[in-house]
Length: 449
Image (cartoon, rainbow, N blue to C red):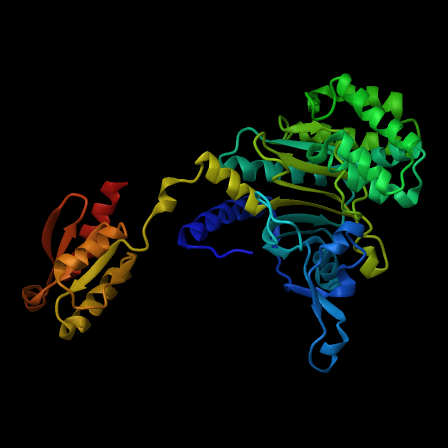
């Protein structure tokens, strides 16, 4: 959990602003939920590993000594959304599209781009099982990243039904499917041997492990997956080839056809050149039921975001199934990559003010405040120097902050109703009528670019 200094805030607000504008272009509406949820709302929704990372809040007051927890900091924005949809179903449209940009908390081990408090930028669509929903999700996050300046990302896509059939084909018991997917999801982080060790610890037999990892090894050899794959929307025949070789059950067939429809629809969106089918992609959260996604850039271990379809989650609260799909961009990781690549606009390095007002006598403070008010009425950002220091000291202070102009109010200026504007970059100064000073400063800022 971190403190954010002014430059950090400006960068964060820039990224959030870009993402918000894109989400709104796609018709998503804003939503916010509390930082705290009932513990029972969150538990059991993320799988065993997710449950262990939830920040629990102990009971308070007379129940504090029990050491029990009844509340928790939200782990993600998806489960609270499901709770909201169930709670306010009668007030929401049948097809509900929402975006939510808020912090979440996980008791995770900090690493590069990974923190215990971090922001997620979510879009979700509820009420439709059409593959067009997934296609629009991929297009929305594609546009957001493009508008931020990213050019080398890809959206990896897979399907839980395909994975389920593969796990069944490997004779892995359904009770171990969740744990197996959690392990597979770490393939790009811990490698084949690491996954093999974790599967053994979770009770998956060596025979099943060998079959499953052998499939992935064969996929790489055939040019599929993240290791050299180029399975784009224009190469759907490759999906057919793998499906016919390894997936002949009804679950696997349905997953393949759904994947085909999504990729075909993506051909008509901005995501067309970004989509890559990845048989390794698993995503460890247990609530996913269909297509799953992750966004990757070459120089970041892990993803910039991810998501998928979760048709059963709302039903846990509502008692009836509601089709749902979502995509989440991770603000912190986007910021890390943009900072390392120097992607932020120069304008974000701007100072806290356009002009600083300087007076030489404490008795003249009312005049300084009045002139500052006139300048602010024109939209200028104005800092008033609070002390009656020597003018050189005040100018030096403004220069140290990068403030480009200083408005000087000495005795002569106050008597004449004027103000002297000093341009620190050009080392020039001109005296103006106080009513005309704002226009001169705005023109000077315009010339600076």
